[in-house]
Length: 555
Image (cartoon, rainbow, N blue to C red):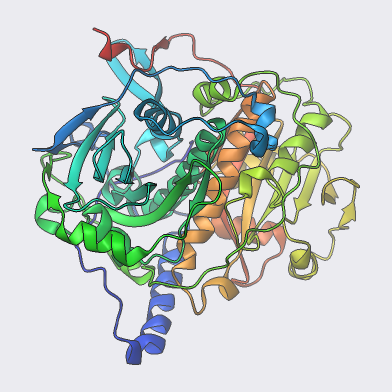
């Protein structure tokens, strides 16, 4: 993802518990205030950027690959397996035969979701790319596999090391859980982002969780499996299960914050999962390993990130039982396999501003793919809260200008009322809810709003993801994180759809928040822009050498 000015560190503790019930309402009001204050404080403005480091110490760059010393290692079968399903076939994942649950297929799930996709080299510098995108390629997201009642691996909690394509067994359950279950847990090392991006880094960590969640969905679908987001779990539950509450196992300032747990459904008809049983096994299991240091020292510290992380921490909740009905309205014409598209995904660094217009059919397909009625959102059971405002620069058959894609019809009138009266809101498609707002060359505006980055104006189109903000978080501040996850999920869909269309996309985390709101006409915090994205014809840097993802394991 392309983001600008950024920074260093901050950190965590293991105090995950919410206040006692009698204080809940008062605490929640205070938490919401903290979240909103953080959001406003970390806005980029034309006259200044959000607070970040005064300088970057490249010798102190956090290690992208976390390891735990003192764990048993499970080496996963070799990487690079190609599967038959086409990317277009993921529109109807129920038609893809389910692969058996084996160590090789569990490893393939982890590889396609969180593994390496390539190495890049320029002179003596060499860096890894991954299947899941990350702000600044810093990768704050850590992935864990939890297995019970499966023959191919001992029951317990495992940490995935993408560099080695291996699992570190953090916990061995003392008693077998009879039911066969596979879970994936995600957490964030906030310091990895804050090292470069400072106080705004908490936002980017949440984007990356959304990207990782989308990557996990696509990886599972390619295997004929599906994911179930266990959204009722509290952060405290997740921390206990993954071992994140074991503060002595982590170096100071390098803790992980819990984010989410997903169940991997490898066959239909899975029984409901009892949280208490898994937590009991984690509490009574045998834990091993301590996290290696990610770096020797921390020049900058950003305590506001800890403050917002705790303010946005989630209690155990009741969640919707059933997802929204799904249907694909525009078919994909991509003839490549899903595994090929997943592994070739890249973040574009610059675009060809002289590109021929993007075919309208590809543009409409990309927008249709991010609607909540598609298979890409089948595990997301909540009404959409993120809507798109699109700067069209070079799309065949569409006048350059500003367009809108409300992802929920119920939000249409609220969006119209909140935006400029000059916008005409003329629906231009009978297939997708795309509305014309304004005609004109908006390249200068798009570039300026995205921190003066040409990548927002040299593309076929760029867009801002606008959230239904205040009403969403006023009584449930942890939904602040979920808004960014939804943005990241949309971003992951756009990344892969761009690859499928033969072009490329990139996320933009650096933009001038309130200038975006002013251009659209927003006068308060009812709607807020949380993420930008842009798609176009990439210009490749021929100075860079591309190396195989796991070539280092074969030497």
